[in-house]
Image 1: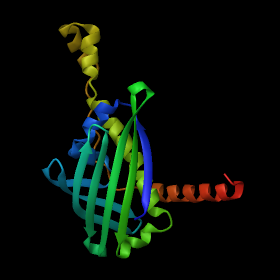
Image 2: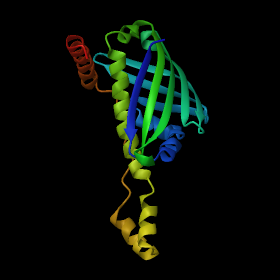
Image 3: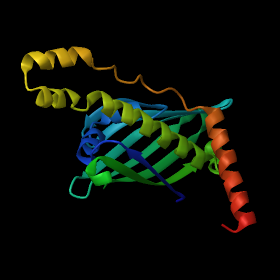
Image 4: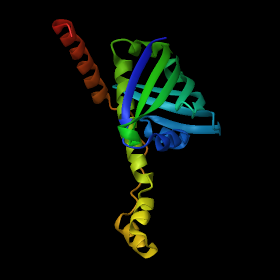
Amino acid sequence: MPELKQNFSVNHPRALVWERFQDLPDVVQCIPGASLTEQSSPTRAKGRMTVKLGPVKADFGGEVDIEADETSYTGKIIGAGIDKSHASRAKGNVVYTLVETRGGAATDVEVAVDYTLSGSLAQFARGGIVEAVAEQICREFARNLEDQLNVTAPAAEADVATIGSAGEAAVAAAAHPTPRRPAPPNELNMIKIMMAVIRSKFRKMTAAVTGR
């Protein structure tokens, strides 16, 4: 299986990020092109993943099994899906680890993905396109997750503790209304993906020339 590795940082404590990762509907809302169709238990669900690459639209429907180990802040997602319109199948294992940074004020998310892609869509496994798609998904997921946590972080509790008065806390709450959650993400942007492919190839060419 090919392996992809991605990482990103979230400006929130690890315990808060971990708690959000266990809320599957909220997590899926952060993934561009993804939708949750059924969750039969905390560890099993069905969903769809849609990626539009120019005139080609991949639309995989499938199931995932979820494992989580809070003692090591590590989780695993095992998924498989079918795109019937292109007679293609995808399987993948996603392992993520949450690491405390900045003295516990932020969290690094390390992601490793093993995957197989078969059928007519397997052509996209070449030329760095899958890597670019994964990079774009991680970038947009990180931004959407940050937005979610900014909305739901306990800022109101901090106001109450600082002000120390119920009346003044109400005034503070009115002055800092809770923003709306981000809307469900749209399909992945083909232009951004192709630009990521070009950047990746340019970095490889530069490294080959400079020896770095």
